[in-house]
Length: 116
Image (tube, rainbow, N blue to C red; front, top):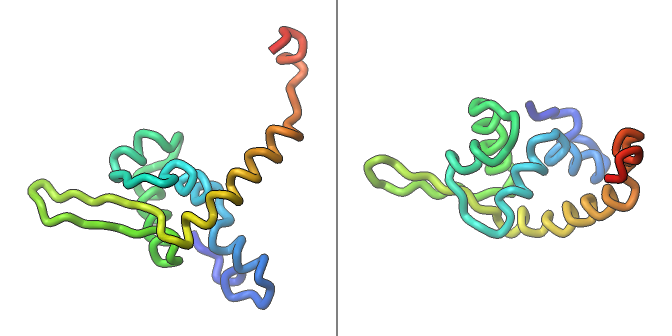
């Protein structure tokens, strides 16, 4: 899923997009936020993502240093994920994107018609 052309670019912005630029990673980071969360919880919260893709995205986020994975030696095994310092530093950027979207979001004609 990772695009090495982006990740190996000379441009810092392009490299950043290569790290967090697909649709799932920002959503996963936003869902985790400041808490620890288990795989099953993420799977239930993140809409329309397959378990395979979720696993791949979590692995890439861990490889890129945005996420920490904690495996507990229990029966049954328990794995939790939490954002690293680098991942936590990305949360204000996501908040800015949400604020930008709310400010410039286009309301559909059908919503205007019913006064939503």
